[in-house]
Length: 214
Length: 214
DNA sequence: CTGGCTTTTGAGAGTTACTGTCAGAAGACA
DNA sequence: TGTCTTCTGACAGTAACTCTCAAAAGCCAG
Image (cartoon, rainbow over the protein chains, first blue to last red):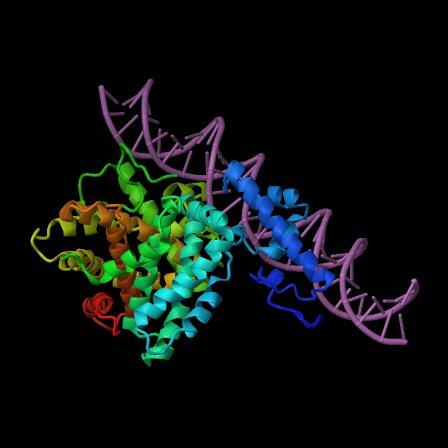
């Protein structure tokens, strides 16, 4: 599909390419630019008129590309908001933890680590995305499905480390629960405008699983 | 924006009407019949050709109503699969639990109670729905959003009983986690063809939250 | 720097899930 | 039976995709 140039990479959600500043061909650079142009145009329109009131045609026009091109870069309008490469970062982070660390600590770090990175770089955008998540059902729906995918990956990682079966009920339930609780923490954080320390919120959320208050 | 159903009854997922066998007028009986006809036609087509390959027009034709009428009964194609009145049943069940029962036990029972009812009455349909849930992203997405709504309700109930704030992080995280774990249990059950005891699976799923295996 | 090769783009036509409107059919009720 | 309300179907419209195809543009010899 993409055998042409020397350093071809995944075209999917790869925006950290620019950081590498590798000798990308003109073509690749242009694609990156187009991708960013579309995203920028879209978020601009979203905050002006709202997500649902903004049509793909409008976005395409604002980004000065054709509607067809829009769909080549983002398979759906939702992907515009959803797509990120959090999962691979999380995997890397998890694998980098010492094998004898308490499992929950590894997971917690694996989640918070890339989160901190992303937050440092694009805090405002994250807040905006979370706002869309809160307000737009379609976005929420897609994000939740993505979270399930993340869950499957996490199950794989934990299975590897604990030796338990990745599709065993216990592991699946545990992972789903942690993700759900963490997601609440992030949401809570965003709802309050990002004023709290995400670290603490995550801690509180995860801790509350154990103690049932009874 | 159609969560409200002010004066008239919920037209959404109200199928237990028939159980009441109340002296419904001809009109109401007809509506019920139409509703069931559409659902039946739809599920028939779904299992023949799959969900996505089945168009609303086909369903309408098979049910012998106009497409307009279809959308009057089900606001979206997904609602056909999703809509149920599990939440109110759950609420009733929870409120019927003794106030001094351990909280987690009340929640567990509140979840499993209506589940058993539904399962006894329409086990096959539940399995079919779960299959769609597994296979069709759009369905999964919608179901997850509904689960969040359920979560909000549960938060309200728990807040009432414990005196904690319903929108506090701890409560929200806990509820989200329990629901996520339970959902995994139900999925697991469905994946294995409903051969296991759902009770046991739910127990295992919820229990696994506490023990982290560490 | 030129010409052939590959990838990207835009144009256009088609499908499907919806939404809104309106006139006519059909229960409800006096 | 006649009026009043609700339900239904036909129709027109929108928006998110999907597919196809030819032209444009980056790429890579020679």
